[in-house]
Each structure stands twice: as C-alpha cells, then as structure tokens.
Image (cartoon, rainbow, N blue to C red):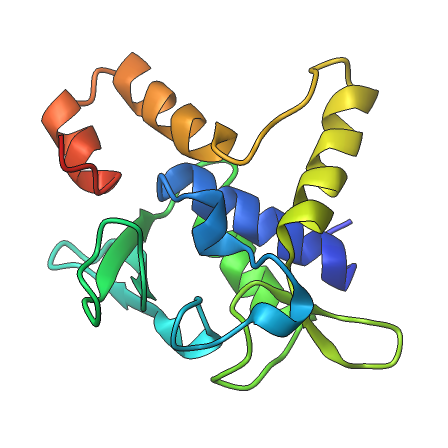
Length: 170
C-alpha cells in the first residue's frame, strides 16, 4: 500500500537499495535514536536531475560509508526503471511522508505525526512478511545489494561497471 507512510518508506528503501547496490546499513538505522544526518541519508542528501541526454536520475549523497574515508561523501546514482523504479518510489515517499531537509530520507510518520527513521529490524520484518506470504523465503540485510549486483551481471553489465556502481574496491 504505497499510500501508507511505513510501506511507502520500506518500498523506497528497498528500491533504492536494490538499484543502488547499497548496504542495508546505508538505507536503515539500528535504532530510532541513532539517526544522525552526519552519518545517515537525510532528505537533503537526495537530489534529482537530468543527464546530458535528458534522462532523469536521482543522486543520493552518502555522508558516511563503509568504503569511504572519514568526511568523504559517496554518490549513489539511480536511474529510472520500467518497473520497480527507485525514482518513482522516492517521489512517492516524499509525497506520502513530507519531511524537513535534515529528517531521515527513509522515514515515515507514526500515528502521532512524528517522523521516524526506518530501522533495520522493522524493514527486514516487513519485507520478510511479504516474501514468506508469497513462498519466496526470507531475505537478509545484504540481499538487496547482492540481488542488484546479480541482476545487473545477468543482464550482461560489465563486471567493472557493477564494481564501480556498488563502490567495491576489489
């Protein structure tokens, strides 16, 4: 239900994580209190634009990442997809869950109207409930990253391009 704040948040995080080859810790936080815009994606870290060919993209500026040097920002670029589109998911999230620039990018509003960051456990629980109900099994934190990389490789994407997109050093 993409009009539900929590489900819109999970959908946007999953779509961005898959297509952006992102670590689960880059799209979620461990606890609600642990969110910091200096360490985690905030709304101001998502920028939308068009490339020189006029194709729409979203750029997520990671303020901290496992493979980044302290203070180094890593960029994740998301392109429009025909289905499971991360740009549409991010735009839907912004509409369903309006938030301030320093609020978590992947956030939702609870019944009291408070902004809540998406926690790792809540996201995995939501995703796994849907997977199990469809007989798919369960997923783990790295499943989106690995799944996105596997999909790109299965489509014939050059492994060096996948390495660069996933920000792998080796």
